[in-house]
Every structure is written in structure tokens, then in C-alpha cells.
Length: 95
Image (cartoon, rainbow, N blue to C red):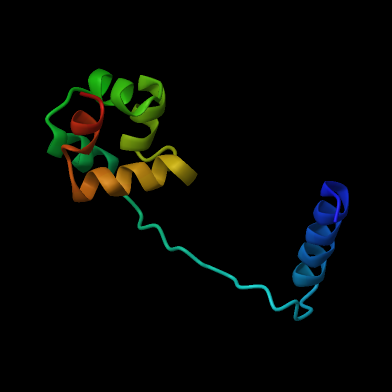
């Protein structure tokens, strides 16, 4: 099967699945908990500037999360949930 044929097959299966047809595909759902960004940062002992830098976001983004104007999503939410469980994670990984 060519790469094109494989991609087309996958797309057609995705469309069928979206339409509710049984494609035999396995579906995995992952629940990522909501996070309290200010509490997580406090656990690390880092300033807002240093914490934002350590996770690769702008300080303004961090401030919006901490003040509830925005919520972290996707990879940022997962990373923050991991840091909540192990506050030294970023420091340990970036040494």
C-alpha cells in the first residue's frame, strides 16, 4: 500500500467514525484535571517570571492563568498537572 493509499484509508476511517459508524477503531479518552496554576507555582517556590520561563510561556500568559482570565489547555495543562504532582519536575529535567 502506498503512503497516499494509507493516508486516504485513515481519513476515510476517521470520517466513518465521526459519522458514528463502527470502524473497529479503539478510542482512548484521557481526562486531564483542572489545575490551580498559582498554587502549583507556589509549590515550586519560583517567581512568576522564573516559573513562566521554566515552562516556556510568556509571563503575561501565566498571569492570565493565575488570575482566571484564561485556562491552560492541551500540553500546558498536562505539564502543569505533572508539576502539581511533582513540583521539582521542571528543575530536575532542566538541570
